[in-house]
Length: 123
Image (cartoon, rainbow, N blue to C red):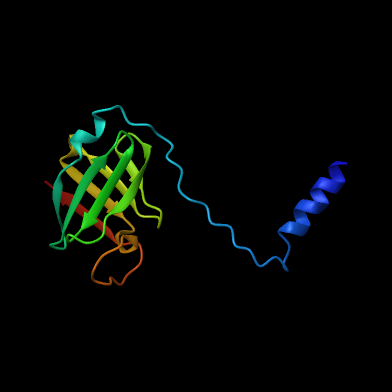
């Protein structure tokens, strides 16, 4: 019976299967009710842009760059978040500083070139 299940599983994900699996980020850390308060500010980025962090509800966290479209953040550990596109945002110094890795993956009104761009910001 195990062979049948394994065989069926291999068939479903074989080379002729046109489906694509997309995994959404999973929040791996649940913030305390007021924990995001240390981060809910606007920060001046090293390239001159501004990024603003906000919260809605108990566990929904958002950011926007240059007053553009907001995007959701997913907590993965204390002070560290990721986005659906793969940017990593880490708050340091009790929220005084934020480091953004893969900045080019954030949705912005102006297209950005580069790979693995790191931005550092302060309040």
